[in-house]
Amino acid sequence: MTGQGEPAEDEWVDDHAGPVVRPYAVTGGRARPVTGTFDLISLVISTRVDVGSESGLGPEHVAIVGLCQRIQSVAEVAAHLDLPVGTVRVLLGDLVARSLVQVREPRATPAGLPDDSVFEAVLNGLRAL
Amino acid sequence: MDYGLSERPADAAPLPTGIKILIAGGFGVGKTTLVGAVSETRPLRTEEVLTETGVGIDDLSGVEQKTTTTVAMDFGRITISDDLVLYLFGTPGQDRFWFVWDELALGAIGAVVLADTRRLADCFPSIDYFEGRGTPFVVAVNCFEGAKRYRLDEVQSALDLDPGVPVVLCDARQRESVKEVLITLLEHAMKQREERRRAAAAD
Ligand SMILES: Nc1nc2c(ncn2[C@@H]2O[C@H](COP(=O)(O)OP(=O)(O)OP(=O)(O)O)[C@@H](O)[C@H]2O)c(=O)[nH]1
Ligand SMILES: [Mg+2]
Image (cartoon, rainbow over all chains, first blue to last red; front, side):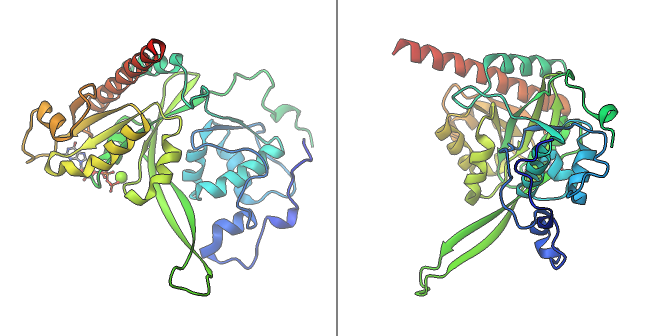
């Protein structure tokens, strides 16, 4: 467990927030994750079967840990939880800070593109579909 | 609490890597249909909430005004192997969301521009965008019933495409057809990479 970057627990919930500001309520008004960048296609897996009595987590955090028992992209997490991607990035940052999920960022060369082997693998994979 | 049994083992297989292809084109041209035809899940929708801050021009007080816009993207998934998961993203249609496109296009291995011959001009902005960025792309002509059939070379010149850019027919509803389009894109992208490398070496 890392204690670093753990947000104060009272940041999680805003009892007064109405449905209009729901995404902000979910993150306690935070716009940026405490750690990580989280590309739409970064892949996420939970490190625990459940989060048990881990304190300071909101229902959305728990839902992400449940969902990511199977590998999911950031985009998929956002779609399944029906939350904006920015909100999901904040929640994932909290979970990474607590080592509750692992994240794999897309692989890229310095030019920002995958290397040749990826192109070949995709081509072969598509032909085999 | 005992976490021992429920932790992901340290020697678990490494996570696969995500890669992406963009599906662009005008409004209603079949982007979501194409994604759904090859995706192993039904197309999912994700939303990005954007906050634009601008100072009102004719507002002398200079008060900052914030407006939020929601941009929706449809996407699907194809598991290529244990190491690679391919995502297909339908790009949001509106031209004013170029900055969302920039995020989507970053690291994308290529793009499919869907075209409808009844309103070919709708795909000009997408073509301009990918040409400008140097993103490899193919043009897939989605054959709607009742649309006049054009020869592919007619489409090619109507779109003023670089001769190297593949133009193919497709039916966005048919898995096999979409698969062919994606294969054409990959072959084109690999060829273009090779050509650029050769050009760079010749300099
Ligand atoms: N005949 C025919 N109809 C198609 C084809 N592809 C899509 N359609 C139909 O065209 C309509 C629009 O398709 P969508 O996939 O929603 O188009 P889109 O580009 O995602 O639309 P927006 O996201 O609203 O811009 C739907 O009713 C589809 O069933 C095709 O290849 N042939
Ligand atoms: Mg659509």
